[in-house]
Length: 298
Image (cartoon, rainbow, N blue to C red; front, top):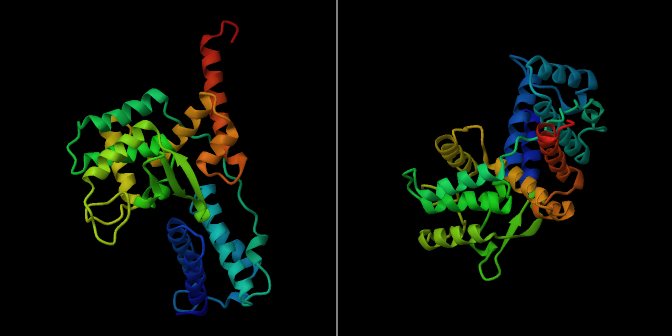
């Protein structure tokens, strides 16, 4: 293992010990592996970290543009490399975080497409109808009800443990990004769906995850994506829907019904209000569409 490869592995180990989510660790691991491959000549070793200068990093960045990657993908890969160099700086391996000198590409300001309340409820109700023959329909219904009724990220959903459900008061304890905890109220339907599912959930020794997969182990994020895509394809004829679609719908519909933006920020677990404000833009876009269609002077 080269020195750079060893440093990358140690950086990943540090991420695992810290507050990084498994998804972030996996994504950064893939990005840094590709970074290492770019720096490694066909029959040689990659350069020592201290010799990696701005010119070489710009060549690497240019190669990402040549691959026609999206600005969002390039930004994430750049964040991974900057994180690595910040780690190398703390360890005394390099004297400067050269990666910070690279210009960050601007991400396009794209508003999320949001289901209407009718579309979201129709899909969730369709899951509850049992029209699809599934091995665990009660679990599937609970997943949809919690995603839409509580606005959870998929990682937050799969990270739920049995002790995180306050069944008497109707609250969920949720661990968000950076392992920050928050409490989210359970809607009536989500609470009912969870109760029905927990009544049939098999008791598995040493497994306290709320949602279990086929092997009676914690359901993983990929499994949730597959479940949502299956139902969305057959019930709504829309395979583009994913777990985060329900989080967008949750926030947008709360705002449309008059909920305070700060309250939505707390419910979603956003660190910055600016992140929550994008849902204001969605609502304003919908409002303007109604105006253009209905107002005689539009």
